[in-house]
Every structure is written in C-alpha cells, then in structure tokens.
Image (cartoon, rainbow over the protein chains, first blue to last red):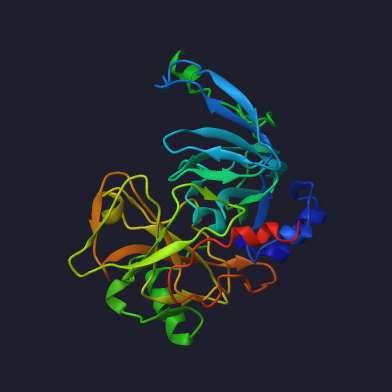
Length: 175
Length: 174
C-alpha cells in the first residue's frame, strides 16, 4: 500500500518518516516533492569503466542563470532534503512537470532502502538541453508499507553520504 | 497492494476506476493496456528552460506512422481518459514497446489520485523508431492507498491532449 499525502504528513509528525526540512506545501495527493541542492557532479570521462573510479568535477548551479544539462551526459545531483524512513519503503520518482521537459531523475534505480536517511543522489540525464535551477522542486518521493519482518538497520554503502556520490561498483568488481 | 486485472474490471464497472473507452480485451493479469492518441507535441526550441514557457507545436500522427528520433523529446497522450478517486495509478511501458527502445514516461510514473484525464506520455526513443496512432503503447496499474485521501486539483486536470510542462508556474511566486 502507498501512503496518501495526508498519511505522509501524519507519519512525519510521528517520527516514522524523516524529511528535513519538511514543508507542508510540498505534499502531493500521494507523494512529497523534493528540491534539488545546488551542487552537481559532472563526469570527466568519455568512457566510464565500471571497474575503476571515475573522475568527477563539482559544479555549483547559479541561482539566477541556472545550469544547462547537456544530452548524452550523466550528472549526479542530490536532494536538498534529507529523506528516509525506518518504517516505510521509499520510491524516488520525478515530477510530471519535469519529465515533460525530458529530465530523468534516476536511471532505473528508484527503490530506496528502509532505514536509509540522507540527502539522496539523483542521476540526471536529459533528452534535449535543459536549464535547471538550484532549490527548484524537481522530483517526488513515495512511501510504501512493508510486508514481512524488517531487517536490522540499513548498512549499505551510500546511506551515510549526503553529497552526490559517485558509483562504487568498482569495489565490488575488484574483490 | 496492487489490483489484479479482474479487480480492475470490477472497479471500472462500479465507477471507482475510470477507463474510457474501456475494452475488456486490454486487461492483463495486473494491469490494463492503453493506446496512443493521434496527437503529439514537440518543443519548438532545442534548448529548454524550466523557468520559461517552452512553446510546443502539435503534430498529428498519420496512419502511415511517425518516426521518433533520438535526442528529441515528444509528448504524446493516451486515447483513454483514465484515473481514480480511490486507487493510485502507476503507468509503465509494455515490454513489447520497451523492446523497441521507446520510453513512455521520464521518471514520472506515479499519477496523483484524482487526476482523471488523458495522461501525457513523455516519449523518447533510444534508436529511431516508427510509431502509429492508436497502437497499444503502455499499461496502467492501480494500487491501494493508505490514509486519508486528498484528490488532485493540479494544473493538468482535465487534459484532453498532450500537455507541455507548466513547471514555469512554480517560479511565478518567487
């Protein structure tokens, strides 16, 4: 079952959902809108090798002029808010207003882990060049009820970071 | 919880799910297949800006088909007017269209409860691909919500054709 907006608000108040800062006007009928932080990572490799770390460059989006995302490139960004829950499963989605401009917010990896509370990394990709702005409402997160007994705390690799975080797949491949 | 095909049919009959026109043969085990309307929108400018009104041109998809190019964003819409005040719809592609490399939404699969209209599809092709009007293009699933329901009253309510982004309205207050 997916939580309605009213239920999300209730669970935030009960402390079962963590959204910080939380703003009631960002609630939708069945999700919560998150904003984008000003910091982006550009990937400075023509060919990414999954077995090796890749070079990145941090850029800061300008409030006035924004930042132009180019097609055929991957950018890593992050949510302005810390988001997570120890009770519910989070699913990271885009907003239709942004999808209608051809911006992907994640690359087929929408499922968040229960217990993970941090600023989420977003995988940005555009179809046509698109200018975006820091702190704009960029996507939404849905909360789902678990079925079954829950694991101990999430102990994954990325949950402790609140910066756009590059892939660590190379660690797995080099084991 | 996700509704089964049988439950979708039952709820359409009771009026708790709107799918208009509704055709029983398009029910799947857990979803309903929807079709592509014959109108498509293409932005006039190559560079888009979330803060601006991005003008778009409406084109009719002829019966002979229309080629989607890579690197161009197309906004289509469903033939069916769909939605529910009781369940949360989530749209997805059909595996048959995905196997042709067609994206039908861009990370925006969740439909607000109470949003009843011809849903806009955000179309993007990995390789050039020809599409045809009224072809089966995607599927919708329905999910049970938990909590008090507040219905959608947003800016796209009542759409009858592809709607380009109204994201610029988010900046009007600031």
